[in-house]
Image 1 (cartoon, protein in one colour):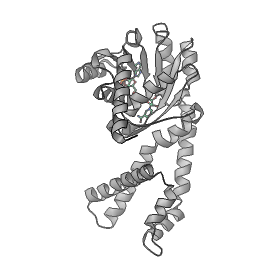
Image 2 (image 1 turned 90 degrees about the vertical axis):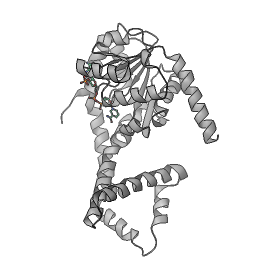
Image 3 (image 1 turned 90 degrees about the horizontal axis):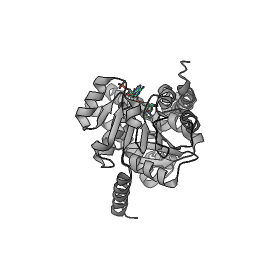
Length: 291
Ligand SMILES: NC(=O)c1ccc[n+]([C@@H]2O[C@H](COP(=O)([O-])OP(=O)(O)OC[C@H]3O[C@@H](n4cnc5c(N)ncnc54)[C@H](OP(=O)(O)O)[C@@H]3O)[C@@H](O)[C@H]2O)c1
């Protein structure tokens, strides 16, 4: 399919999906929730008059109402009443109690999409207490500039149409994949936490430039664009990263010396261990464990 046809198809799906949602309840309009809200409004997935968002503090609700023209409050029950789509962007530890609070107001045919890390579909189903269509989503912060990576996992009652609708929401914020729920903790440790690891790498490369006498701004730009370009090449070509690395690495050139330093410093193992640790931690978040 040509890119134009793909864009048109996406636009058509967005319009079809937009027409199908009569009321969206966004529970927990914090950093992620606001980012998703802004994306859904600007992609015209939904109009402001159909959104009811909730937060814990009234001043934050007032801010959201003025900024986006949506209905915003601290009243989860009112927000959920009549909603055919409920988007959960609460902290993991808050999900169970908020669902217990709203379950009687939840329409039986509502679709629930949850972006809360660590909260399983089974937990959501059991907190609601009746068979409910759930799609679990794991986005990341580059969604805020439509360069995000989101993984979706459908629950046992979710239909193909539900997954399509979730895709329309998250496609407008970047790239979307559908995965089995058993992979969600790994995905959390890799692509949801991943931007933080990448910022550390960008910062370190920029420091190297500064050490070699480059102005900091220039060094940061060189570093960030290098990661962006290399990432784009991996996605664009579909080549194994090792093959692309070989293309840069001229025999007896300078890159092989740099790579040797990285191997000696254990970059590869360190990154693998970082993702594994974050994935293990993701499993504990819902219980609010501190260690
Ligand atoms: N940030 C990310 O990169 C990212 C990526 C993937 C998934 N997630 C998941 O997204 C969820 C939210 O993360 P976040 O970074 O956006 O956190 P956040 O900024 O702290 O947002 C949480 C929001 O929930 C609101 N809230 C708290 N208690 C509430 C209640 N009882 N009823 C209604 N709203 C309530 C808070 O209101 P106030 O603003 O008034 O305090 C806040 O707006 C988490 O589960 C996280 O795992 C985040």
